[in-house]
Image (cartoon, rainbow, N blue to C red; front, top):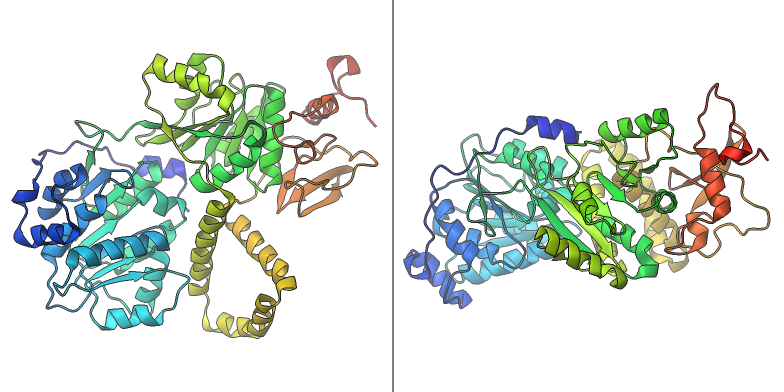
Amino acid sequence: MITMSEMSKELSPIEESPEMLPEISRGSLPDVMQQAADRAGWTELMPVQSKIIPYLRRHRDVMVQAQTGSGKTGAFVLPILERINKGRKTCQALILVPTRELAQQVAADARLLAGDTGVRVVAVYGGSSYKPQIEAFQQGAHLVVGTPGRILDHLIHRNLTFEHLETLIFDEADRLMSMGFFPDMARISQFLPGRPINSCMFSATFPIQVMSLAQRFLDKPEFLSLSQEHIHVLETNHAYYMVPAMDKDRALVRIIEFENPHQAIVFCNTKDRVFYVTSVLQRFGYNADQLSSDLSQSMRDEVLTRLRDGRLRFLVATDVAARGIDIPALSHVIQYEPSEDLEAYIHRAGRTGRAGAAGTAIMLLSLQEKKYLTRIAAYYNIQFEERSLPSDEDVQTLVGQRLVAQLEARLRERDKLQVERMQRFIPLAREIAEDDDALAVLAMLLDDTYHEWMHHPPEMEPIGTTAKRPEGRRKDSGSQWGGGKRTHTRGGQRTSHARGNPVVDQQGSAAQQGSGTPPDNAAKRNRRRNHRKSGDQKPRSSESGAAKPE
């Protein structure tokens, strides 16, 4: 797997377009495009359409910074309709999208624009029957819109061929990467024809992963942004979520699932909050660890080495502890709470958006904290994007689609013997699926599979050991963070795991305190004891703040 640092090294310098093409108007479109615009009821072109259509008509590869709802579908479908040879009954244009909903939407828009011209459009996505998709290929689909996993399935089984492919479009490329489709797209590249094809990429942001994808598929791509007079993608995207003050921890988990950062630093204002947020993330199964001033230099170096090597996905830290950290390929900075110091925002946000790629800086704000957003925006003249907090249902849909794509990818890798071996479990799978009481078993297997794939446990244990559970406290006392936990003893110390990740298990743990509440004094003492230097160093006295041995 290509790491973020390796991606940044592979990226070649990005140069501005040598020739900026003039925009095109509705009346200057060729007849086939004007007729398509008439069918859609467009009296004028959207800005993205006026700007991008001239590049595609000249077969120039471009990367376009455009948001959802900007009219970008028309920007690439109209040129596709112009160049399709309707007499050739084979795939001539491929549009890769991240979700089945977007595949259905883009295909519907393309059918509307194509009308009765004879251009055949098919939507192809996972979690649905193969039969109608294969029939559409056999009937000569000209324009294929689909998710990478299902497209790859059809290529492997020779239901689909790219022999006459002329156009390749990546729609919402950042989401394609966040959904985990990079391996599938890399394999799709092996089926592309050896001759040049016109490729175009649309994305709201340009992190390193997206730029690496562009350099794999696009030939000397030119960068166009609708928000700038000139080409400019090397920037930080500033966004915020409004979240309930007492539900920040759960909101953070939903945001992480939706944003799917490749690697991120989560900033908190105090050591206690760092400890609490780290506990929450670990308890939920994330590869996370903390960095605070309580750590010794050797422990600090150990955590930072794991972060730089890509073995640590989420680092939770205070401003003081994070001084001097330079991770060139950091995709996200998440501010769990805003700092009262205005300059701290720039120091935090400035840790992403490096190494020749865009980064994302996110703030979680309660209603009482929104005043800090106003001050920061005015002081630094920053345009913040408000993003809607994803609901549990939104996350459920998203992770379900990710998992289906991953399971289908695993199935493709199985040889005949493995496929034969798994047949013995089909009756059991059907029995479980039809039994409501047994669905929990199936859900558990899917949950474990998803977390093992998306949130790999750290290769090294998080800094800190586990304190003994106080007598009389109920295990998993009414918290959503406590489910699925098991404990065992290692080296005389008690260790807790949730979905494969070591977590802190101490008096007043994150799972048992409720949302938004920092650890109590006992937890503070445990944390100081847990982070004490190991090895030949003698234990500190109780006057130094370390708890006495039990």
